[in-house]
Image 1 (cartoon, rainbow, N blue to C red):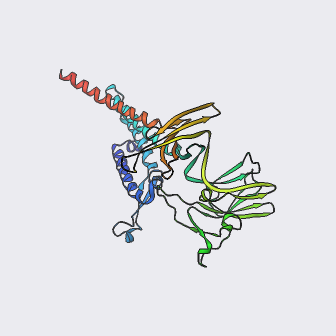
Image 2: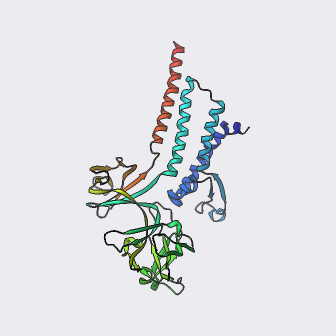
Length: 392
């Protein structure tokens, strides 16, 4: 009985209907929450809750309404199970139906490929200035707390702490390479940082006593998180560094300090350290050097028409040193990563940004679409040939 329900055509139709509903409501919410948040809410969940928008008629009265919708992680696996069960119970292999078998196999592979992409794909970016090189990627959505041992002027000892290890208050972390603990006093997924002297007496109490926060008389205000495509959350934390003899100081760290202010330094047990909260980096075993950036515009306008980067790949481990051109629709594929020409510094036109994607299953959609096309050609071709023979 259960196998009959799982393999039924009615279940297939309902799952396809729910897929359309999911895409419809996901598209509506994308305007308000951005692509990333919508993807997580609707397509990377088992059940999604859609809320009546405030912007709609009677929004203030009906905003409390929530409707559950099957999420992508529920619909996708059920479609795979449904196709496999349908073949198991009803399909008998014959050469005149081999095309249908190939089509369904391609669909299953396409769904599995999408699942692998969501679970395994990594997207980062890399900024490179003309005449300079870079050997690390930066994350779009993740940050890290970094403590550097800068005692040796030639080599830095770097300890990277993922942000999800310090985003709870209170929390205490003892890294084996650090002679002190890192304790979280406060954490803000998104914050506004202003000078306290400009505020009224109702400002929150300043609890940090070292570094930029103390020197600049900064005050931190909690803000709602943003999910817009062109905006980034100002991740901020107040951390206490605690040694064997007590606190070394309470520091304000934020992912916007790294671009604006000098590094925050301190000393402990005859060692010099820097503490910074920054965008998460992924270091590469090779360098990308930007030799030349060119930018074409549509005649008579400032609208970008085409932009390209002539780069040099320097891989000392593989003794590789070569040049290549990256431009729109012509990415660089190297060592499992794909470098797309994504943007550039419009003020100086001397810096280029590459979207860097690492997707182990990037070939799966091509293979599955090829299988579906082959199945359609075979099935319709077989019927066409058979009908032609019957007419003769």
